[in-house]
Length: 82
Ligand code: HEM
Image (cartoon, rainbow, N blue to C red; front, side, top):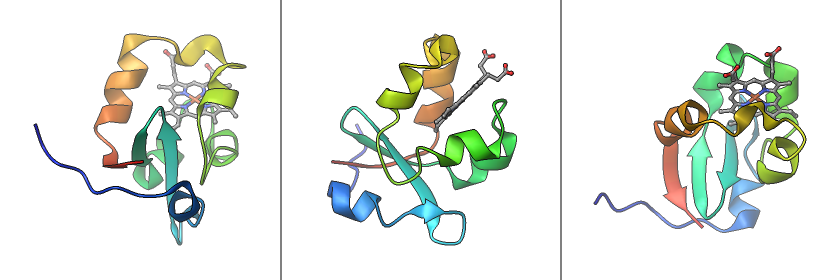
């Protein structure tokens, strides 16, 4: 299995805009979703609400994300582990 670098939540929180790259966490995994922001079916504004932090509080409200194809998409953007 590939080895990913480890990051702290404080480091992830420094990536909140496309200019500084948009990072999110899901579980203990870290993703750079900058290149997906403009492709998001729910729009760029909504996805940016989670920028720099955890997806879970938002995905708890928008159950559309609880489908296998959404997690498969996310996997392509993985850059690290917490
Ligand atoms: C829809 C991915 C973050 C709100 C979707 C869909 C995908 C997706 C693939 C379409 C699902 C389908 O119809 O089968 C992602 C990813 C995210 C993310 C990869 C983070 C990396 C968020 C956040 C919010 C959000 C943080 C809200 C604050 C929505 C909404 C829709 C949606 C409202 C439904 C759009 C519609 O069908 O009109 N998202 N999402 N998403 N997302 Fe996200």
